Length: 172
Image (cartoon, rainbow, N blue to C red; front, side):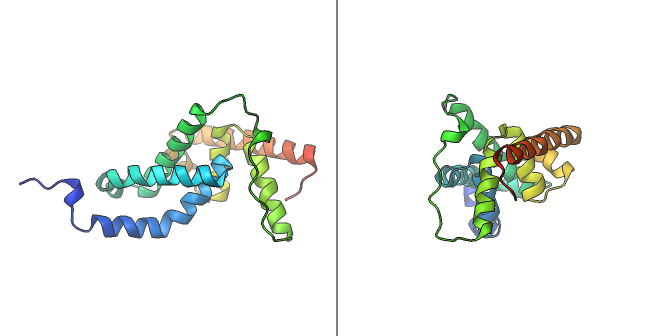
């Protein structure tokens, strides 16, 4: 009798371990891409459901991490496409302020606001390259583009961030 993917021994334990080790970075990436914690939670949940359904394929991939990040990015893209595009970025709901007066919290919020001004592809490039530490090649694999595209998107994104910080007087 043919064994289904659901009945594969050790599948649940392997998946749980993956979620334990990679869940926090996935949430961080989703939050930086979406700008909203609740939406990021939904995106990660939907991503992990898809990853679980295709766990055998994911774990056999050359880079399971890149495979999962690609699913995450596609979830963000899909939600962005479905959103009403007439809502300006400045009107996104702000997260409740954490009772922490440190400059670090202010800088993180400034970065979040700046990231939300970028087009999704540039935002994804910045998050993957500079905040998650992926190489140009790894970023290109996740985004499904060439390393040249990663370089040009990075350049445009950094120029956009610089412009935002110059305009607002915010410093990192």
